[in-house]
Image 1: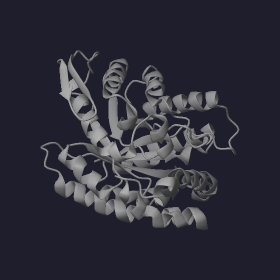
Image 2: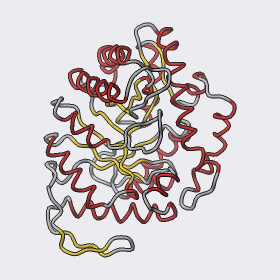
Image 3: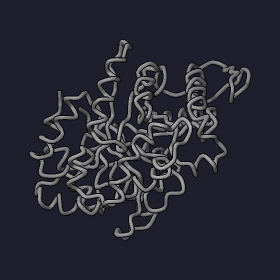
Image 4: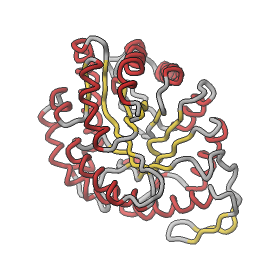
Length: 350
């Protein structure tokens, strides 16, 4: 199981740092992770979410990271395709792949914010068809030949979509997965799967099993799982630091998803099924609850190794670690990076 990093580029009110400092410190942490042997640094794309996420142009941040690192891969988790024209997406991904010398991991998704859909002029009810058509166009663009496409949403002939990515046939493709149908669709499309942190581990474990059962490709499946994690030599200190950071992160996460949980948007019906978990937000998020639901892993190296075994046993190949959930000062994050790399990662090398 590979250990990756997961960033929202958060600015929590209790952490006295500016936007500029957040970006600079994140790039410094990715550079350290590169030296320590982490597999990939993943950035989200969110808009209009003050405090929770200032990662509105993650490809630009990853382009900067590409010039500061040598080995660590650079992941988009994820690009919400309904918000973007697929030709622009193909051009930007190929450019990033060139700048990083072929280190891009490219995740796609539908997005979940009604506000984002409204601002960018897309219909939530059309999210599935927009995503499917965009993915088809991206695959044609990566094939290094003129692209012709006539669909419900896009229509053009013989476009030279340039530049071309370095990786052959293209950067590894992933998709965010929340609903059971998306896990099955990901398997049919031979996409890596990115799960969490919306759902409890008990539900995701079943989704992973169905994804693996549906996988028919000759290559091995790729399963990513996002977990809020804090591991330090002193387990008690780790819990003390994690309590505020992880509880803040998950409160913000549930607050951003609440509009979808509360209303039955077309093509987002499964989010409504998760609506019972909105009670977590209303009754109060706490670290014990998050650990019970498998959304957080906290403790000493030995404790974390024990808690992480269940993810590997279920088939997780990439553990996307939300390091302190963006609410931990960079000195603590860098201490965490050393602890995980030196004390935990060796236990999961196959």
